[in-house]
Structure formats: structure tokens, C-alpha cells
Image 1 (cartoon, rainbow, N blue to C red):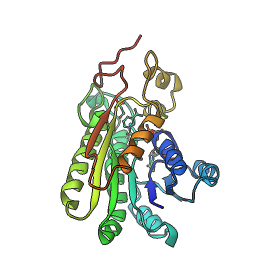
Image 2: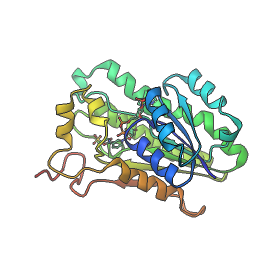
Image 3: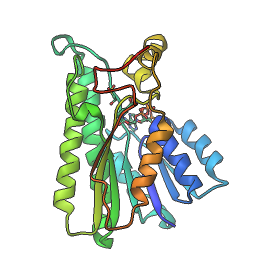
Length: 249
Ligand code: NDP
Ligand code: 8X3
């Protein structure tokens, strides 16, 4: 039985991936800040598989290290790491952007991903096996108006994904990124700081990707034969051609 650690498992893509992995028989370590949601999900998935939960903020390096090193013996061997935790905070021109939003995006989407990876990679190196999936974005492939720092954080994920693959080459560890376009999750609610009306508008007039669609791709990625590494995959809704070209009816 393979063990997968998923960051950002309390919602959206991470939660759907947890559910899919549970059904497919993976042992799970689910991470996030909202403990109540993690406990609820652990309860729901207990009929399918063994689930261990870790509650921490990926920004807190000491906490990341402490939580990951505290894993019980049955969960210590992490075969798959899904670096998913992250969000956009705000959608403002660079000249009037909120500096706290910038800090949040760079600290969570970039540094948080690094802290978690740094804590897990040594075990993979020891075993000369493992699979790291980095959740990037189309925002890591192009820049759109007012996306500035979020796009920068996802361009960094793109670079880190490439860097990990290069540096870990020869150690039996697969590294790849999944870069989604618009996925209907709590993402826009977080970006617009709880303004649900504004958030809903983002997904109106077309069929957005659903978190289950990304979970399906992540599952496909981790179930390829060992010699196959999905290095970099971009997926958009059929109605989307780029970050700014969306066929809304
Ligand atoms: P959600 O808002 O639904 O989920 C975000 C997850 O990240 C939550 O589980 C949240 O958990 C976790 N998270 C956020 N901040 C922290 C933190 N500081 N410490 C620990 N966990 C944190 O959004 P999505 O599912 O859409 O986003 C998941 C990933 O997908 C992100 O990296 C996002 O950038 C990326 N993405 C999303 C797209 C979209 O259109 N939705 C498109 C392309 C990429 P909690 O709050 O409990 O800590
Ligand atoms: C999320 C997709 O277009 O809002 O990464 O940046 S987008």
C-alpha cells in the first residue's frame, strides 16, 4: 500500500485528491490548517483507508519539520507528495497591491512548498524512490492583468519543479507539475476575501474544471509505470484558451 501526503487537503483539489486516493487504496497523510475539516475527512475516509492528519501552517518552518518528523511508524514512508496547499490573495495592480497579500502568496505558495519538500525529500533519497507532484497553474506559464505576484509565485513553482527534477535525477524520484486553468473551488473566495458573489462570477457562463478532474489527473500521473514521469502537464476547461480568453456565454 502506497502512502501519499497531500497538503491543502481541507478543500478543493487537495480534498478531491484525498477522496480519490482513498477509494483507490492509498494510505493517506492529510494536511491543512482547519483541523475540524481534516478530522471530518479522516472520519469519512476511514471506511476506505488509513488516514493520519497533520494540522500546520506551511509558512511555519519549525512546525512543518516537527509535524512531519512526528509521523507514526506506519506513515513514515511517504511514497507520494502532493504539494498542493496554496491560494491567491487579492487581484490588484502592482502599484496598489496589498503587501500582506504578497507576503502570504510568496510565503505559502513558494516557501511553504519548499519547507514541506525539504522535510520529505531526505526519506525519498534514502529509499531511492518517491514521487513529487507540484501543483502549479496556468498562472505559472503566463501573466495576466493584476495577477502579478500570484503569477510570480506560480512561475516560481514551475522553476522549483524543474529544479527538483534536475537535482533529484538519478535517485529514483519522479517529479512533475500539474498546471490547471480555472478550477471551481474555494480559490476565488479566498482571493476575494470572502466575497462570494465576486467569487461565483469567476465560474459563471462556462463549465469550469472541477476539483475531481484534477484529482483524476493526479491519480493518472501516480499510476503510470515507473519509467513514465509526467513532467509538466497543463489542463484548462474546454472554454478556456488562456488566462484571459474564456468563452463565456
Ligand atoms: P482551495 O482554496 O479550495 O484550497 C486551498 C488549500 O490550501 C486548502 O486546503 C487550504 O487549507 C490550503 N492552504 C492554504 N493556505 C495554507 C497554509 N498557509 N498552510 C497550510 N495549508 C494552506 O483552492 P484550490 O483547491 O483551488 O487550490 C489548491 C492549489 O491549486 C493551490 O496551489 C492553487 O494555487 C492551485 N490552483 C488552483 C486553481 C483554481 O482555479 N482553483 C488553478 C490552478 C492552480 P487550510 O485553509 O485549511 O489551511
Ligand atoms: C488559478 C487559476 O487563472 O485564477 O491558478 O490564476 S487563475
